[in-house]
Image (cartoon, rainbow, N blue to C red; front, top):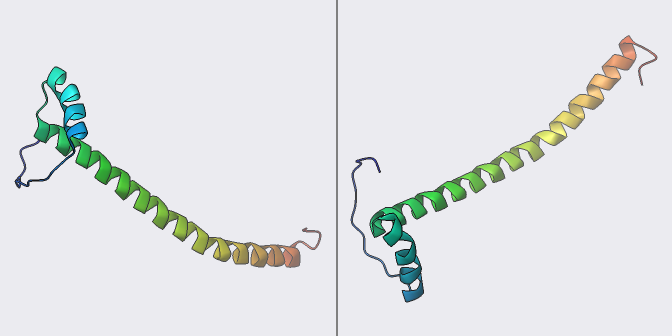
Length: 86
């Protein structure tokens, strides 16, 4: 982990979460803090990605109507220039 400014926080987890975490971190010689930091980073990345995908989807839907209108205008203009255009 990079040396960035860190803040100490306290929180509670269930006994089963603690035991599951210990089963993973002991063999890998990872600290609880590092394990939690990585898990938190992964969760935050997933949330940020999901929010970005939702915003992109909204943008694509908003542009769909504009693209539809442009296609109709383009087809009309093409039909005027090339009468056999369908």
